[in-house]
Length: 413
Ligand SMILES: *Cc1c(COP(=O)(O)O)cnc(C)c1O
Picture 1: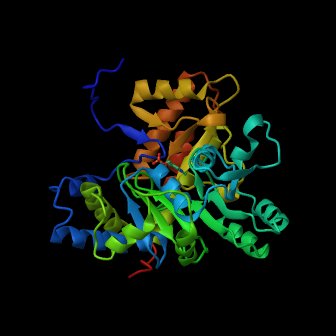
Picture 2: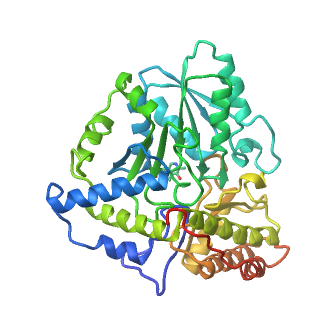
């Protein structure tokens, strides 16, 4: 048992793909005194974050900020737009898609779960967990639905359980090609602020996100970005909702306030995070995560271990899933690395439990912190008896050294 007051020296390496390491700048901003959430200063803070968050979603339409984890915003997306018994089409990219399905089912929706039809030798019972959404399957299913019983298509943009992204514009094109009126709902809880995401341009109706991944905040706030069609749907939708109801929140947000007590100090943090993202420029933020992903994957490839994402086109810039050899329990490797090197890695979730671990490359990081993660993993793999082809740490160093950061001019500037 680890005593609660156990604090090893130096920084803990929090390399799970969320919560991500929080920059000191954000922690300091959050330490400001808590103010009256009905007072005049609060309205200014509220208006600032409500406006700034729209730029991150790349939308001109309302974004709701909830004092809830991402799961709450999943529920909000569904309960605001749908009615009991409505049919929704979801796509099994991994554990988070599976959990969103469970939320929908518990709310009384009728969920159809599309799954990758292929096989996989490494992960035979989770073959679909190595690929992104196949938009053609969605189009085919929607074309069969001539009665338009399907009311929403729900997909995950960055599947945090696997390290695979999905092509959201392709899903939009599939819905349009089938001339189907279903709403498009996207979970970009871990994609937002790391991978390019364009709510308006991509024709998304509701985007769900959260604070503790790409936005670099602690857990505790989540978001719904809403299209005009989704807002319209909410006027007819009959699922019960109270805390999550959009209409009352949107009304009060007009002056920077909420119908209940919002999480003031996390909003200070959000304000700081928005400044950081804006100063750097979103294009630079996305390129930075791509580069980090490349460097980490160079290490995994040198080790000779399979990357969970089987399709290089859709590698996640947020995290890399690594499959351990048969007979090596990935959770034992993780535990050893945590005990020996004070480094936390993401566990294999659901169908991937014990077969893989996840290396996060998001939040307050840089080349050297990522190299420390790679070194910790390499030592842990060797100590666990895994035969490595080559040194991953050298491959990652070589990648970072050969690829200096190139910043482009801030689009917004
Ligand atoms: C983290 C995450 C969630 C769950 O969010 P919570 O804040 O844990 O409720 C859902 N979907 C994805 C893709 C995530 O990464």
